[in-house]
Length: 373
Ligand SMILES: CSCC[C@H](NC=O)C(=O)O
Ligand SMILES: [Zn+2]
Ligand SMILES: [Zn+2]
Image 1 (cartoon, rainbow, N blue to C red):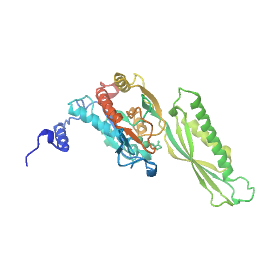
Image 2: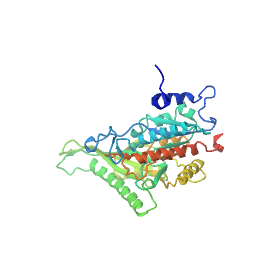
Image 3: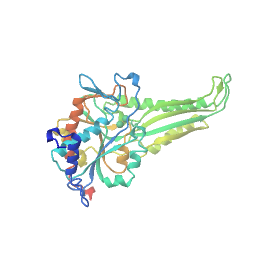
Image 4: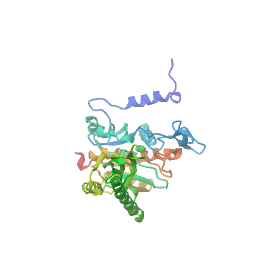
C-alpha cells in the first residue's frame, strides 16, 4: 500500500508523526526547555451536570450548531470548551515549533461537579501530582455577558450544614410544648436573617461582587410522617458559601449559637466544610499575574478580577500552595453554566483558542522565581 501525500494524510497519522518528533528520550525527556523549572498546569474537569432534556431546544449531547453559530450542549461553557481550547492552543504552538522554558501540563479530571473528593482533592495528594511540579495553574472561570473577561483569584468556601432539631412528639390537635418544628423555625429564621443582611450588604455596595459576601440558601427540609402527628425530629439543610475574608472560627461559633438559642436538642453537622481559603495575588508582586494581565492588556482584553462564588478544583490546587487563576475565555456570552440551553458561539470559542495561544507562551516563559529553587 502506498503512502498518501502530506495534504491527504489522515489527521491521526499527522498527529502521530508530530508526537514522534518530540524527543522524550530518557534520562532527559524533552518536556520543556528547562525541566528544572516548575511547570504550568492547565486543568479542566471532564464531568458535566445533569440536564432536564425537556427544557432544551436541542439534544444537549448532540452539540447542535444553529445557523448563527451557537453550539448547544451540556458542557459547552462548563467546561468542555476550555479543555479543547487548551489542546488547540498547545497544538498550534507545537505546530509552529515554539519551545518554552517551562513545561506545560494538562490535566483532565473527574468528579468536579460533585465536589472533587474522588478527583482533584485526591490527586493533589498523590506523588503523580507532585511529579508535575506545578508552579502555576489555570482552571475554569465563568462566562461574562459583557465585553470583559472575568478572572477568579479566590473562591468562597462551601459549608453544607444540616441542622437537626428534636422535640416532644404528640397528637397534631394539641398545643405540644417544645416541638422540633418551633426550634427549627428559630434557626431557619436566624440563618435567613443573616442571608438578608449579606444580600443587603451586596446590594448597597456597587464595588462588592457576589463572591465577596457570604451566601446561604435553605436547600432541604426533612421530617414529619403525617398531618396529625407532631414529629420528634425535623431537619433543615443549608448551602453556605463563606467569603474568604470571614473569620471561620467565629462564623462556626455563630452557627452553633443560633442552634443553642433555639433551645435544647438542636444540633448541626457538616456535609462539606472547606477550611482552606487561599487568595492568588492580583498585583505585580505575583509574576504569574503580571504575565497573565500583560498579555490581556496587549490583546486589549479587559479583565474583571473576582472571587469565584461557587467551588471549583482550584481550591485544592491553591491549598497545596500552587497559585491558580480561574479563567474561561468567554466574553459576550450569557452565563448558562448548569442551565437549560447551555451554549457557546463558535467565534467566542475560537477567540478563546487565540487567547490561550498568547497566554501560554507568556506563562511558560516566566523566568525562574526565588520560590523555584
Ligand atoms: C461543594 S462541592 C460542589 C462543587 C460545585 N462545583 C460546581 O458547581 C459547587 O456547588 O460549587
Ligand atoms: Zn465547572
Ligand atoms: Zn459546574
